[in-house]
Image (cartoon, rainbow over all chains, first blue to last red):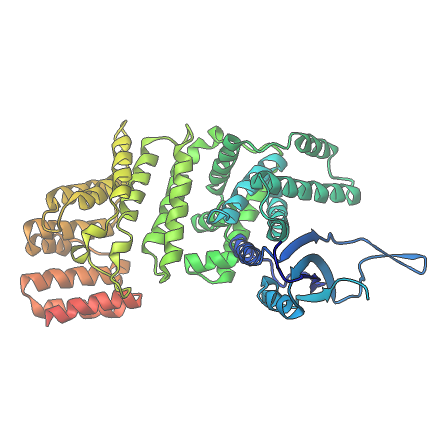
Length: 117
Length: 410
């Protein structure tokens, strides 16, 4: 039996400015963005488990009423999510600080620990 | 890991394929769709890793994007032809991405760029946009012009194409064969822009040369393009590219041919260049590319500056002048003659020349005269010409080069 420390599960919620990217990137710039993400994923592949992308549009049901989602008036939208299995919240923050999302103006990553009391 | 410039090259391939399928008049729609597909790829691939067939993935997403826009257009605009919708649906069913077709499509696009209704400078900017996947900013940086100037050139190219290409069916490469000389000139200028422009960033200049070679090889693989002229152009490109890095010293200063470390010349590239030169010798055609490639070969094969066959080079410059008359070529011939027969012979040729005003303002004119007078021992005239050359030299590196000559003179 191994004696690995217990891992805590976290959720990364990636948020992007609702207006989309500030200016259209050139193919070369997009490839650089991809390379940055690929390097980050490789570095933390034991801890970060990628989720799905979230397509634009959708719907919101509230008190039985349906509206177009997500949140037309919102300043930012959820773009995708990921799971992180690691030792502590401090470590989850450390990993997020290195995430390439930090280079996108107005974008952010929210970190939440999973589970009930 | 993605291959270098994968997105940029893939963008050129996809725009070419989609524009053939949906018509050249929809080229902007195709460009937007490809941009969207690349953006989605960054989002998806960043998280999930690369798909097995990246190119097919991108093609499928871009194709769906075009079809989506066309459907929305049809819904709002009854004048959009039904046949177009049918054509689009057929395309969707045979969503294949065949390698040889892609090459054909890119080549067709290259010939479309060479449309005689588009000014040459716009053709080059448009080729960089559409075939090489550079953004307007990146082209501006590479061609050493303002963003606005490049934007206008691109708009001019698009406007000319919209006017000329209305039908759905784009012409085949064979029908466009008469544009081959213009295509070769575009590639030649693209290469020269990288090889000898004022752009100080070496990486950027390298990239332009690589793109020119990539497109020229594509041309050479097609029956329409596989002519001796194309082989000659490729020979010239490789023989120049082999010496690209040796033209500067460690500090970025320019080196004269006689100062270059010949062991830094790329032997492999020289070999490729020489084999293209052999292939270019078929048939009757003798173009400026033949002459310039042969001159480059003479330099590449000479073991030292002194052992260069200057008589042969002078003869080749004379042939070059016959197919491409320009006082610049005469200037270069004078340099070769001076190496071969001494400064007096070179100066005699230049003194007999009636230089046009633009040549008098070109720093190499004065730099050459200054150098030849210096060798003759006429320090007064040498200093006068080199001083003029110094004030006319366009870049810091070129001024430094002239200044060194001037110091040798005094």
